[in-house]
Length: 323
Length: 294
Image 1: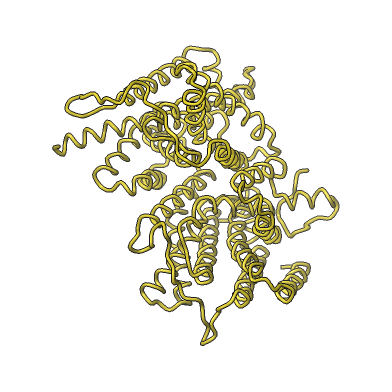
Image 2: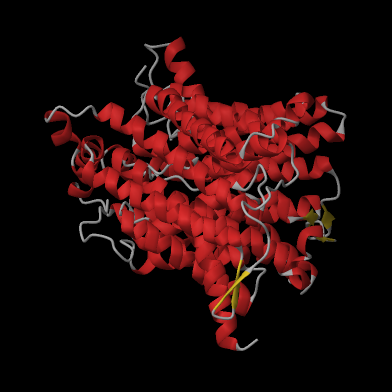
């Protein structure tokens, strides 16, 4: 994955490791923990958007499936926690496969609509299957994670767990995009017909990436459920899908480091600016629209391209801004 | 009430909401044919139609016809601005980027409407009373008659526009082939602008006639847009008669599903239909064979 990326990753991991020593406030830790989960979802979504050239507006549903499957199976049916996380990932991946196979054969905006429709169905089911999901009032009492007797019972302990998972995923994803698979996907993104002529099974790649991306969102959802211990449908509405898409776009499609920054920025910033919260919907809409109109390949990559035109590959991204 | 009468009753109410889905679906098709994109903000036009009508009619106490015309004009202007602003100014003309820009526009409109009109659902009085008429044993609200009438009028007027006027023919030429249209001296740019404006007007009309039955609130646009899209897909994306058939069929299926099976899953049903159609016959009922698969 390149020397530069390795150095960045080590520095980033050190920074993440050291940060809690300077933070005493549990609220700050919680915001960072949520950021770690968002990073997980956003990296997965970026693999889909930046490399398969497809947009999903249903990632809140995959995130929610992970959360509800983990929550319900462990709390109501007493399943063991860790295997259930993987079971939830497998089931979510299966669902994504069923949606992906027919729609990914069509033009991009069919996946957008199909995933959005799927998000609405899942959301309605969370609300209506009250005996199982707890309905609008949510599902509570989800156990906290434990590892051979060590119970994760504080924000600080979860901080290290969630960030370890998140950085681990970043490492694997960076490896993936610099592998044969990654180059095939980059070719697919730039010119599908040419990629196909070069012998790349573009359809299979698109489906695989979509399924992988859904599984990553499910993992984040399971961890979220075990961390917050309470889940309700509101968290998994269409708006969350839109938020993660905006995070990818702000960071830049095809740039995984951009995704990390985009997710951090858009999770921390609204918390920091309490006044903005009231206008959350409007602000997200305007950011999404503005970034797409002026920096179609991402805000951070766009700004980076303007700042240092000679410096290429700032973020290991495949896209070059046209600016 | 016998089962058959019940089914008849549900079909009638399904046709009523289905008519408005048809109007939204036509709006989707217009913009799709001119530009190749899916306009996510289509549902917001419906919401805005209801909201403007409430403002003009219930708050400003304007006469109904004037309020109706003003509403159509205002929402058409918003469609106009959406095209002139973000869609036209976009640096990248990639379809997916443009589609996501309309998603952003849709969310912005929703957020702004929440600030202007608040979060509570609002309603309009029916156009002519609440006394149901009895037709073959089933009850019809007078508002349903208005909805059928106005939808029929719009569909007839549009088909005249597309077959009988020069501008309409130019729009069809753009839909058939953008390049050829440009070479024959048609201003494609203006046709795209017109398609957005017309879609705004259609959405507004749907919103105005539907509000007395279902009420409106700032967040109803996404749902309405999705249903209109499902209707368009069901009928055959980009086809005008397809949009009408798809809209009516979706309305009826939804109403029967809600009445006979379960009303809680009414909204989920529409998307289930969407997924099934995408799965088995993505060209829809009236779709042409030349469906673009990438």
